[in-house]
Length: 269
Ligand SMILES: Cc1cc2nc3c(=O)[nH]c(=O)nc-3n(C[C@H](O)[C@H](O)[C@H](O)COP(=O)(O)O)c2cc1C
Image (cartoon, rainbow, N blue to C red; front, side, top):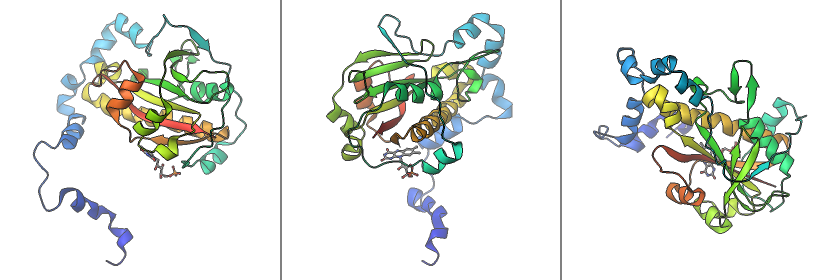
C-alpha cells in the first residue's frame, strides 16, 4: 500500500473486521455510560446538588486521602527547589529501558511526591498541584521503595496532609518486576509510584462521568512526577500495563471495584 503511514485510521478494520460492533461491547458500554446528555444530567449526577446542600459532605470531601493514622509516620523533608526550566524538562523527558541499581535521595523522592500531589494551602481551602474535578482528589500514591537513601525497602503510603510516608509492608522485587510485565526493564529500579483510584470519591458527585475524571487526573499526576524526575536527573517510565490482581495483592487493601491501582511510575538511575 502506498503512503501507508496515512492509513492509520484503517486500524478500525483490524479491531472490528467486517463485523458490526458486537452488541454489549464492554468498551462501548463504558464510553456510553460516562457520556453527559443534557436531558439526563439531573439524575446522572445527583451528587452535585446533594453536595451543595450538605455541609457534612463538604467537610468530608475536603480530606481526600486514605488514612493510616495508627501506623508510624516517616516525615518527608522539604521539597528541593527545581532550577531546571520547564522547556528543558519537557525536551529531556523520555521513558527509559533499564536502570542501574543506583539510589535516589529522600529529598528527591519527597520533591517528586509533594510537588506532584502534595498539599497546597489556598485561601479557598486545601488543594493539590494538579487540577481535579470538584477538587475531590480521588487518587492515592503508594510508593514501592527499592533503593532510596535512609528508607527501608518496602511498600509505603504517601500522606499529603501529614507530609510523610507510612510503611505498610514488604514486597519481593522479583515478583514486582513480573507484575509489571517488563522484568529486564524494571529490575534495579529505585522507587515506583502506584497511582491508585478511589472511584467513589469522585463518583458520589459526578456519577459515571467520574470514571473519566479519575483516569484523566492520574495522567496529570503522572506528568508532574515524570517532569519533576527528569528535572532531578532521575530516569523513569510510566506503566499502564501490569497484572491488576497481582499488583492489588502486593500493595493490599483494595477491593478492585471502588478502588484499584490504575497507573504506575517506575523510576531510578
Ligand atoms: C498510558 C501509558 C501506558 C504505558 N504503559 C507502558 C507499559 O505498560 N510498559 C512499557 O514498557 N511502557 C509503557 N508506556 C511507555 C511508552 O511505551 C512510551 O511512553 C512510548 O514508547 C514513547 O516513548 P517516550 O515516553 O520515551 O517518549 C506507557 C505510556 C503511557 C502514556
